[in-house]
Length: 211
Image (cartoon, rainbow, N blue to C red; front, side, top):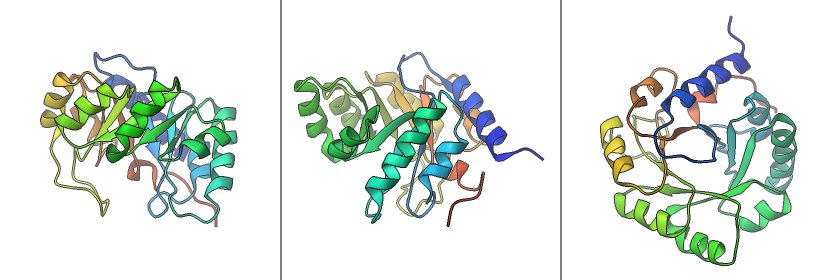
């Protein structure tokens, strides 16, 4: 039987084959934490192979700061890139490699760049206009969703791989595909100019979580 770590390593290898023409210093595979679908960020960090990335999004968790610190320690030890979503102060406190910005907060990203912040920045983008704003804000890569049908309650209608590829061709920012990405769908992104993938549920059942 394939171990959870081996399964995630295979997913990371498949993500590397997706890598499009737009260069980015970010890893080709980003895993996003989620209080409901991926409740243990430290366990998730332990599963990720070196050269992948973790985006910490545990909004509303009472022990969020402690979880972020533990996740940062684990990713540092494992050679995994670590970004904190929508909380520049928490990112600073735990020594994160970068920040993930929601689409509505792109002006804050632009201001941070103007102040000289050189950390890695990713952002959510749900339209070509948002991709243009991301480029103006100095974003290193944009996470575009929803690409494939997803179990996430917040996912919208799936746009399909060719639509996201069309966006990527027009974008000045490297595009990552988010939504419904798993070992069965990821190969449909090869050769489309997409620079990487972001996942939540694809690793959800890969291993046990802490109680």
